[in-house]
Image (cartoon, rainbow, N blue to C red; front, side, top):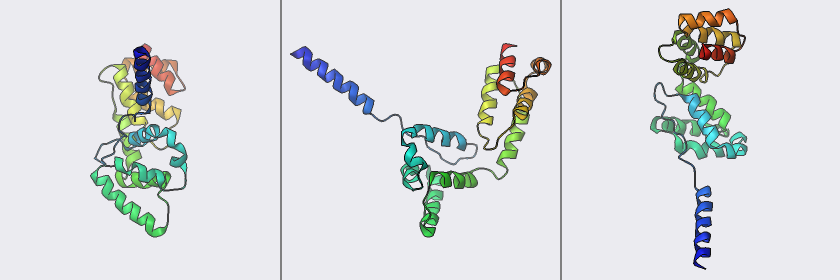
Length: 183
């Protein structure tokens, strides 16, 4: 009987752990240099099981995530919320992301991002360079052609690695990365 009670308690513990909330949702402070796109991605992943309300034409999702905003972003959100209420427009996730980017991204963000990609150089290991490159690439909202990706990536490689990549003329970024990693 005691063993049965212990097993029952153990099963209850296991099931309650499964229901327990995962770690806290990502927060966005709106600080200079903070990766807005990474926060958007992390938020969408965190709430993946709520995709239905995320994509709905209602304010429900944005209202739910507003508690994950830092002070300066929350002040902006208050004005955004008032504007939406005044015009009768729902605070949809799409509208929220568009307005958030407009407010917290530098005006010339995509151009500056291209500059940073062009100036990025491999100083450490190839794996560190790949990580830095992919971090910058993930911030772009615009499509970047495979040739442009190759150009930026190859431009920052050490000379001997870049020469090897050029000799093999890969068409896709993943091929360039593979060649550089194996060189």
